[in-house]
Length: 152
Image 1: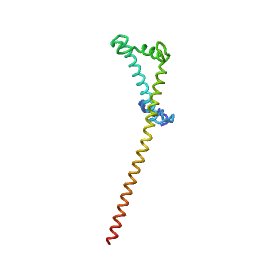
Image 2: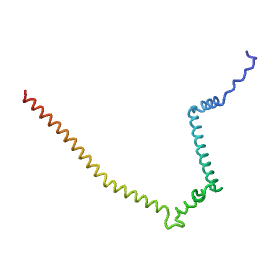
Image 3: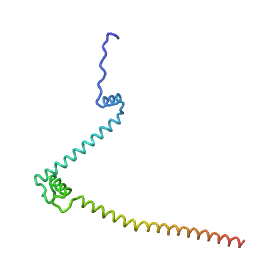
Image 4: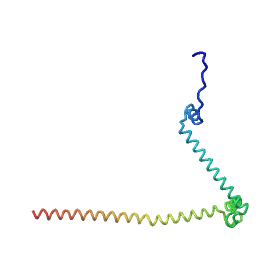
């Protein structure tokens, strides 16, 4: 047996070699598969965004869609800058956002001022009703018990 040459080990598939490499590095194959899955999801997300952006640029550049229905990406970016910087408008977009937040806050405060006392009142009335019903049932039970005792 000493003089005989050893045959090479059988070739492994790529999946087997990936699992072997993962075992050597201390990472389980399911963890490496999860990492590959996350990477694929990331690449698919980026590719989808780039494809939609390219379609948008093509649709506006080749005028497949009229500008009154779909603005170009550059036009949108320029308009957003104008809104936030307050260029060519009487006030900035930040001011509009602040006014909207103020209105939402006032509406929330008014609704809280009305709803909290109504909720407390509702709970007090329903609590009182429960006690009255319980009291009626106890008093009627006592009356029935007295009648039954007298009849004996």
